[in-house]
Length: 203
Image (cartoon, rainbow, N blue to C red; front, side, top):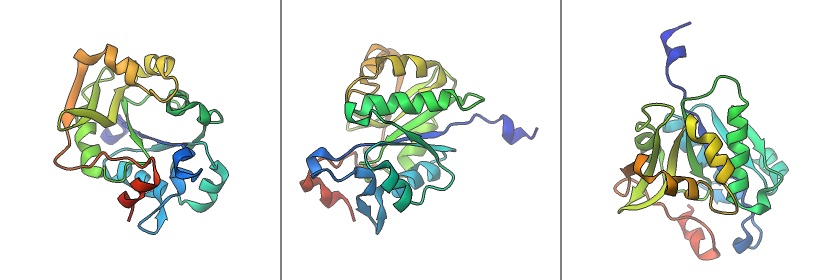
């Protein structure tokens, strides 16, 4: 084995299952950004930020996403319960990571509908990983947001507590003293795309 094979592996986990209910039922993964589906942009951001491989959780219009987006090299995870909220997608992604063979040291989680978060923010949060017990998250002028880094020791606990649209919020609240907060407001915009007015965030 080479030395690189012993290096800590930190994959990315992209939550891209949302159906865009407040966008008139337009799946967020397929929104156009720079001429291509938004999910492609989000995958590239994780890769350029140093995450490998990238897991993508699909839900709404999953077959269309597979057909229209170039996701070669990604691990695609289906979430048939996507309508229950982001928590179900987070559980699906973490379960896929757990069953993928040798456990990664940590995972960096991002959301498909935040195009203003680029590779630099991903890399900054990823760099906070010190062990399988690490927890880190980006902040924007002190307000917590994505990306979030979860050390492997936390995956089971996060999956057990992820319900509705809360994702890892409840678990992270209980483990606040152990979280490394990484200010990213100088390099990223955490604004998301929920309503038609938010579509101005896309190019």
